Image 1 (cartoon, rainbow, N blue to C red):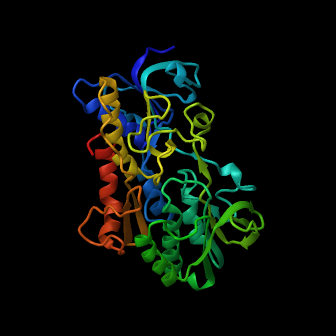
Image 2 (cartoon, one colour):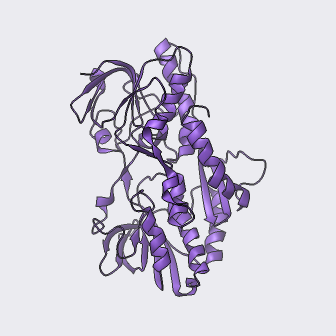
Length: 395
């Protein structure tokens, strides 16, 4: 057993690091232990532009150690079990870490295995994905080698991190194919499990016009279930009728099914759907009051984005400190999330909204319009805000 810690944070992604930094920034900061096995930290929102060939993926990766706040004990290992009944977590190297309060920020799990035939074929036969650092390069390679046929972009029937990403790369791919003068020989298809292009009507209207303008075909309520990589065939199931459809492809961009990590799903922290079961406004666990959670692993019914975490982290820290002091939990998260929807090189729609689906826009203009300024915000300002603001607990 390691030395007991006042607060244990499981997960060193943007959620875990943001909470750790904020806890160390308060007067008389509590003792904090962060458990995270990764050597590197990634700024994933730029992977869309990496896949389109606009950036080198190296700019999205930095050493994890550079972002562990001073004074935080870092256990470079993985949690393999939660024991909230005993205020403890168990790690893969055999440690049992006891806490007073626990913050779960484990992120989301990519379930590549749920697509039959995909294993071993990412990065081959035109099958690519921006959803991992290892595979994002091949998206650009697939676009550069494309000659003719179907370019298919998928969205699974599960929650995913950055729900706009599956279509962002599609719009950029359309631009690349036009630049290479092969777009007239391409059929671009968006095969998505969703019922519409986007869930918020104000932004969906713009995106529908983008799809129409670009001549993109949509196959809504279709879930990718299998691939025949060697023969470049993708198999989809219609979520309402159950009818299966086969679609040939020259390029297939896969957004993998996603879920809460298995270690969360098999624990008593999990909701019926497997996520860490927290109150949607206070971020406190509904059964274990000394446990809090935020980000992609939580049950919060909002989009899983870094922008959502930026609003969740201060609420969680305020309420966690209030709980430690025996005070009421007064901070409240309203479900804010943001999705910077790249609609082409130099064009972006900045969607911002809350639990009710109402826009919560930050700028004094209509953010549903495609704008160069918002594209430059994503390319330059948001990464700086992330690395030097959010992860440092400053914003």
